[in-house]
Image (cartoon, rainbow, N blue to C red):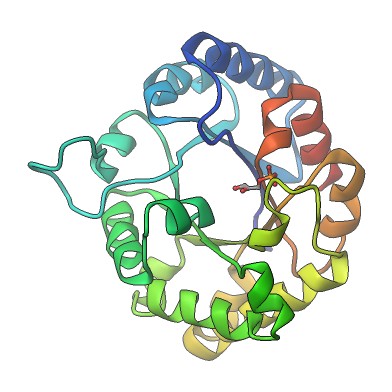
Length: 252
Ligand code: 13P
């Protein structure tokens, strides 16, 4: 059976001490009451990674970064490589978040390079896709997501693809309080699973974890996660509040 995952994307929030405190309290909670249904992943900013890895080392919560460089190493001032991320103890990296695509002009070609670096370093990739509101309103949202996946992922080998998690995050639902309805999420997740089946076969499609992201909160998580092709969530704002994040994990 494919894995369920709930990952918290802290984005650019929390100073070092706030981050450590949040990680500690979430880790303590799941150490005492392990999540049996979902793998829990925290994705803090880069500067937190090593310290949070230390906090999480005795526990069952996983660690991820929010981005990585497209190059392996060298003279790229300000960048952080996938190997460096892996060396902190992190197991995951988010690639292709819409905020990276929009504010930092990351295109599918760059995202493929990042994904290759991450996989080479031994990380699992949470690869984000999703359409903006105008694309949904004009009915091209399936084409947009298809292109993001084809160009960003589908040149990977089947073996590499087995270490990919896909997160569908409709951009109009991110941080807006607007959530996709469970049927809108299910429809896109099924579409994604079918694309993967066409490319990599039914086994790969059935094993693929597909997360929903976009204004997910305790009050709507249960009904979204109940859809057959929704395997958990990528949580922004609500992952900064321990109680909300835990409630979302428990909604799986
Ligand atoms: P919100 O949960 O704040 O809408 O953010 C979702 C997101 O972008 C997670 O990566």
